[in-house]
Image 1: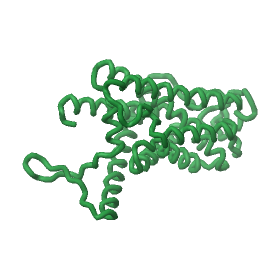
Image 2: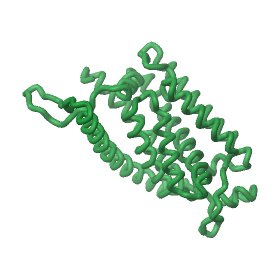
Image 3: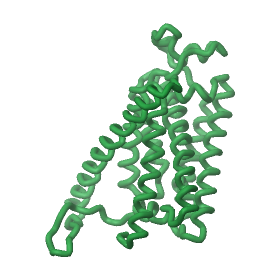
Image 4: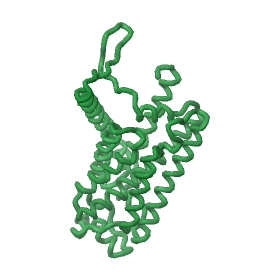
Length: 287
């Protein structure tokens, strides 16, 4: 992936990372933004927590109303640790943490454009992921020789195939807020998660993998997307695959916009809407 920002003049390494002030690409040779050992530790940490079933769900599978706020706090703490570790790594190379977010303008027009792009991106991504999910279920049904689950209405008529309940569905149901205090906490958590995960996966890892693949943007997109999927091991194989694809979409969005803001918008409200929708369905006894 091409670097997001323009040089700040702090070091020769930064001058190779960021685009020149006249808009021309930087030197062809991509430079890593943190030591290799730092990135390896980050990757191993993410995989370890994911395999233990705790990434973004440190309360485990049995999260209930009694400890949901505790789980939110643990999740927020984990995201802050990720941000801190990334900040430590880039500081070792004298790269400003803020540069990982890319070049952005704080004008209302620029923010509105990113918000609009984020909405279109989010809707298009969900449609693509829904198609992939149905393809996965169809292939799985063909391999296991089991019928595809069909939603049946009160009239007895069948409608569209429904996704069977699995680890991902249980995780969302267990984490969804159930009262006003939890809803406020959930929304704040979603903002933090959106910022932290875009910074870690698209701002840091994507640029690192791009550098490690000798400046190949595709390498940064693919490997950061695979890490994003692998980070959600507690949700099961199908969710990991779909989230890897989702991560690739976010990576391409970052390349297109040359910053993370649109991705942060889409990531934050995707999580927020998912939780609030589940809370609404629970309140209406529909889920």
